[in-house]
Length: 173
Image (cartoon, rainbow, N blue to C red; front, side):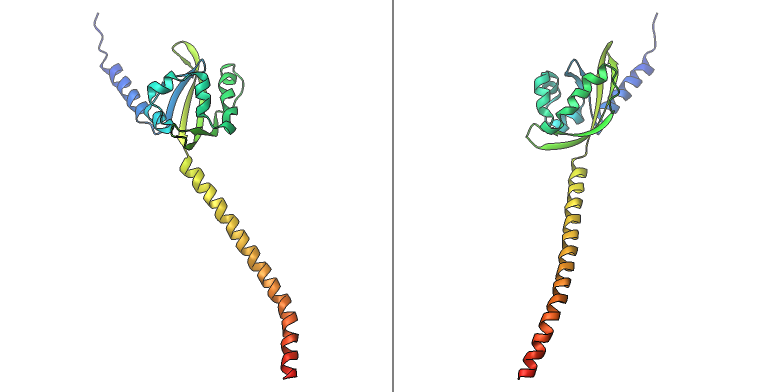
């Protein structure tokens, strides 16, 4: 019995293209390891696909910024069925040492018959940098307004002191 698998082949090719061309870093975590990842995840971390898959659980911890390692607990909790947020932000440490902000979406799935977690990471580093710059500029604006107000009040006080002194000086001449 022969089957035409043309449509199945097209669907597989479309799926592969969708995953590989995605701007989001996509990976599947199983048993505290990465078992699948795409090209965007390689670019986001600086590690090749083979390097990411070869990393031990302890080495994967090192890719996550120390202040954001709380997020790693979500994987095991999610696999146990606990209600865990599916979206959150955290920082990853690129292979070069650079810090990259990501918006992570993770959910429990079945992969090859076993529980796993599908992760999608979008690089939001530029967005976070612009956000920090806006905060800095707002602080400068507030400081400028405060100093202008203080300057105005000092001028008012000094006018009250200097005007009589100038009038006294004129009368003495």
